[in-house]
Image (cartoon, rainbow, N blue to C red; front, side, top):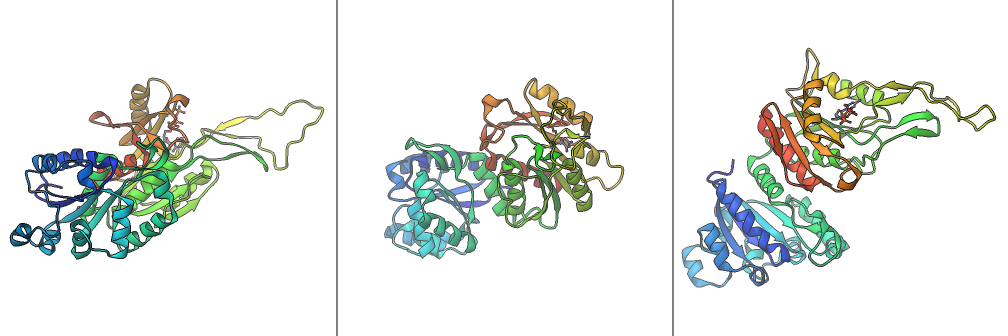
Length: 397
Ligand code: CTP
């Protein structure tokens, strides 16, 4: 996908600038031609020499470098690329882009270009959360600028939260997507997400710790690749992404009905943490404490939505992806689960409390397919979703 693509990589001035070197290296490995542009602030963090060594290209730094103007003007430079990538995109660069400032080479290129622009923001969490940056972000997105990250996590400044540069695989997947012009255009993909709530009586229910973050991120990443997404969600903590068809449900039974109603689909991703059982003797009215003793709940197994869809005789999506939430023997259990349920891929993750995955912002998955197990690095749920969406796009297009 990246072979022979021309990428203009603008490296802004932030602690994460050093990660641009890894990004550059990976892009070259995949056959892309990268022309680096280093801002004045960026040069405080990485040297032009490392960028030029890794890119095997001249590094552009100065708007008023007449030699460059003779060789290639800034208009030409900004248009010769297939895509402009800004990594890291600092708060300052984002503000310049929003307001159309052109007082240095990077901002001038960004204003002069007629190509798509992808930014990977990275900054202190307070700068990211500041209303000014958030306003700028909204404007940039409205202008059609593509955005990857930032991730949540511990930052070099000692604070914690959103602001870390997206991981290299996520940036590469976003670049892939930006260059492929909506590979999932016209594809209908079903995503289940969140927990289910199984009533005990009208005021009580059985639930689990799923926040819906991973399913939401997957739906968002699929939309970004042009998919038409039906998002069947239980009562999640995270709001559904924009641009999807949301079907809100409470119970496993309702989730199955919604999934059936959404068919047919080209692919389906079952990220919901569906309750395995519901209460057979759920009360129609509130169960009261009384002298007759403690209530006894009788459980009945819920329908297995993933297995049902995987084993459809007709109308089965071409690709069915499940998750395996495990606490022990993760790979062995997940491999067996893939075969038992009949899905094509399983993303296995260890949901033991010490991993912080369930309800957390990161995931650490192993993709299990008929070809074996592929370990992915621990990364944000957003990055995991972007990587998965790119894989789905490759598989079904
Ligand atoms: N799943 C489903 N319907 C269910 C239970 C699970 O669609 N009733 C899906 C989940 O969305 C997930 C996969 O099946 O994609 C595996 O879920 P998991 O909780 O790991 O497995 P279980 O089937 O519940 O098996 P076990 O509890 O024995 O590990």
